[in-house]
Every structure is written in structure tokens, then in C-alpha cells.
Amino acid sequence: EDQVTQSPEALRLQEGESSSLNCSYTVSGLRGLFWYRQDPGKGPEFLFTLYSAGEEKEKERLKATLTKKESFLHITAPKPEDSATYLCAVQSRLLQGAQKLVFGQGTRLTINP
Amino acid sequence: DVKVTQSSRYLVKRTGEKVFLECVQDMDHENMFWYRQDPGLGLRLIYFSYDVKMKEKGDIPEGYSVSREKKERFSLILESASTNQTSMYLCASSLYHRAPGYNQPQHFGDGTRLSIL
View 1 (cartoon, each protein chain N blue to C red):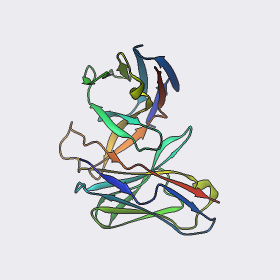
View 2: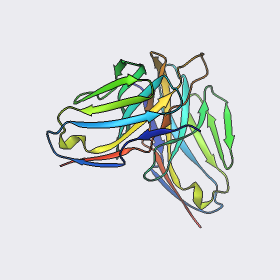
View 3: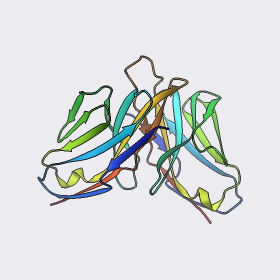
View 4: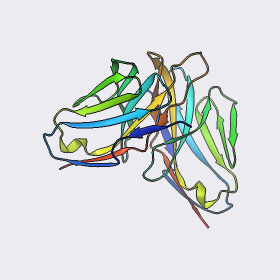
């Protein structure tokens, strides 16, 4: 059974204090790993897709990396507007041309000014 | 810009009622999905559709049905609402997966928070 575990559940940082969020996964044949950001009362917003070990993607203060067992979301010099829940999802197989995603439970990130 | 619109942000219904949740996307996406999101359980797939009138069960389809009569619209139906269906419901859409190694991301609406009393 495909599984995704995110840690920590919650993380509180000071503005400018860099850190990393972890997403560990077990999947039979990874076809893609997705990172989303979710603000309170909103739906998840797509950030990155990673396909193979060693791949990295960057967007502003965020950088996502991938190994064979886990992915990290590095946040450099975060600002209060980076506060959100970050979700990780893996895709292991296709269903009629649509992804079958398995989501982790998310990391709730709070950046204090 | 990508736009997935869910008809209601908040909904309160009574046990036993038939409930309809509506979702519309304006991106001409082939695939549409319904998830529920619960604290401690994350997002779980209820149903998805890969074409008009086509549907497939997800991980937790019991107590739900879906309808897709037009490409842009995907409805989730609670046949007889129960209190354990109180949840946040999220609709998503994506393009058809066209090539290996290039997966189209799913784009989400802002959700419907449904309370069953």
C-alpha cells in the first residue's frame, strides 16, 4: 500500500530562520511527487512536481528536492506570508489517464515576524 | 489562469437528506476529482471522472455517487446524508496524462465545508 508521511506536523519559525519540511514515502513505482501549499479556508495550490531522485525545483524562497525515499521542501529566509500548510502527494499509477495521488497529512508552518 | 469553482463554501444539511455538491472548471480539463479532507486523515479520493459520463471509484466511494453530464461540471451526490459525512469537500481537475514522465498537476477549488446535523 502506498504511504506518505510528513514531518513535523507543525513548525514555528522566526522570520528569516531557514528550515526544511520532510516527506517520506513508500510507493510501488513512483511516477511523480507533488508539493502543494494550502492556506486556511482555501484549496491546495500546486507548487512543484518532481519525477526522479536527484531532481530539484525552486520557486522564490522554496526549493524541493527528491531522493528514492523522501522529499524535502527547503524554506530559505521565510516571511510571514509563507505561513501555510504544505502538502506532499505521490503518484504511483494512472487511472484512465488521471493521476492516482496519495497525500500526506501536511506540515503546518507558521512564520512569526 | 486556472479556475475551479465550487458552488457553496458552507452548507448545512440534515441527516437523511440528498445533498448535491457542484464543481465547475473553465480549463477544458478531461479529468475531475472529488476528495474529502479531514483532520488527521488528509485528503482522500472519493470519485473521479476521466471523460463525460465516465466515472471511477476512488478509495472511499461508499455513500456517494457522482454525475458528469458536461465536460466542465462534476457533481458529488450524498444519497442519504449521515453525520459521518461532515467534512471539507474539495474538487480538482487536471489535463489528461499525455506522456510518460510528465504528469499534469491537479488544480483545486476552495472547498465546500459540509455539516450534517
